[in-house]
Length: 94
Image (cartoon, rainbow, N blue to C red; front, side, top):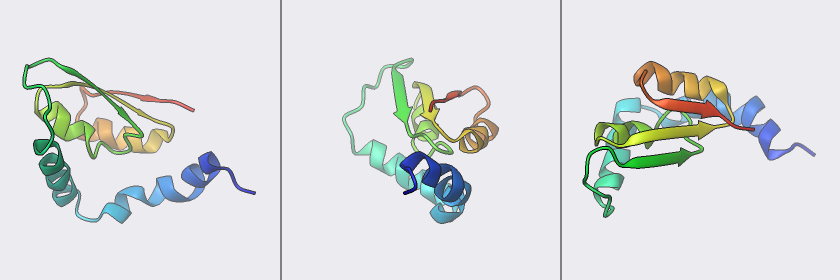
């Protein structure tokens, strides 16, 4: 039996960004989802994105002024996030 972690590393992780399709459209949808939430409006608020992947929610949160810590177990997706937002605090977690 394949573990969830193995499935993510060997199958889902490598194709996750491709599955989303147009990255800019996906980020716009995520931003709209966040707009519908009663998030704090003060600059510098903190957010933790568990299972952050390539930053589908981390990036829109950072654009709103949040200090985002992005956590994911698949480093290549965090590397994609860092390429889009170099200042993002991203770390891999097993």
